[in-house]
Length: 383
Ligand code: PMP
Ligand code: GLN
Image 1 (spheres, helix red, strand yellow):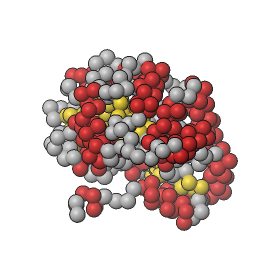
Image 2 (cartoon, protein in one colour):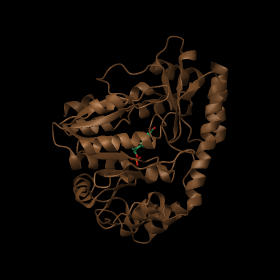
Image 3 (spheres, rainbow, N blue to C red):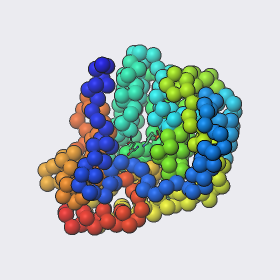
Image 4 (cartoon, helix red, strand yellow):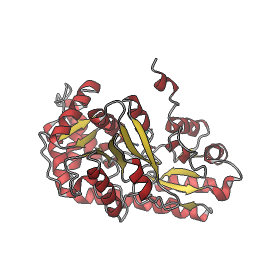
């Protein structure tokens, strides 16, 4: 078998979720909501199943969903997108990421990544024969080091993969940072793959797609996920917005990997994207309340936390409680002794790179308030 894949360890999300089950723990590790998404979407999906929507959908997605993706690009960001040629529906953002990489990478290319990074990025690009050039955000403010970012771009760079709002850091890139990235993308004539699955989950800061900046419309592949925008992570419906010349190649990648995504779910996601602004405002307001609840509770327990302006996640510094343990050991201790599962942040760094920070763990706050309260209560008793 393929050596790289055989040696790839089991994902940290599965490991921590298994430990959570074993220790009957509150699971603040893997990022998924513990309540269902909007009932009206589930009803549309169920009705579509009974309405003979059970054969292959068109390769690039149901016209009604491509139309809804284009309309929401205009509504939220003023982006004028052609639904016929500039949208590709995928089976989750995970597939979208792989398809976008496949669409531009040739063996030997370099891709700029920003650490800490989501765990599929490195394997996906390495399997295509590309090399990662990682730039590290600097705790405690998750600042982007300009000189290191500049130095990561070179003659072999093909693309940057940017995740904002960011998992696991909870960082939302500022307009100033986005302008710096856009300048480098233009200067080096490269592409930008923009993982924006948490686009609607920001807390009093504006999410700005890189694609809206000067010169970026023709270079960006912008990825969204119904899992995150509608709290339906099991559905695995994603969508890419890209200029036609790239979208047609992304569609080829989708053709060889998946071909078409479940039509009933696509119909429901189209319905969701067409819901009015109050839905999206409520989604982020609810989540912000949960972020505040957990963050305040962590502060009361003596943890300091890093900025978390978007996504499902907040990162805490464990130094005060770690008693010599690194993040992996502490996360294991916490699940075994407090009954609270988290994710060690070192898992989000290139294992072959310089040593990752050892003092940070990630909490998911996309859980019901009483669940977050229970986790805090358990930690209070154990620490
Ligand atoms: N990118 C990031 C940053 C994520 O956090 C996730 C999901 N956890 C994904 C992509 C994958 O999204 P999907 O479930 O739609 O494949
Ligand atoms: N994206 C989710 C997280 O970061 C997990 C997704 C997965 O388990 N692959 O927690």
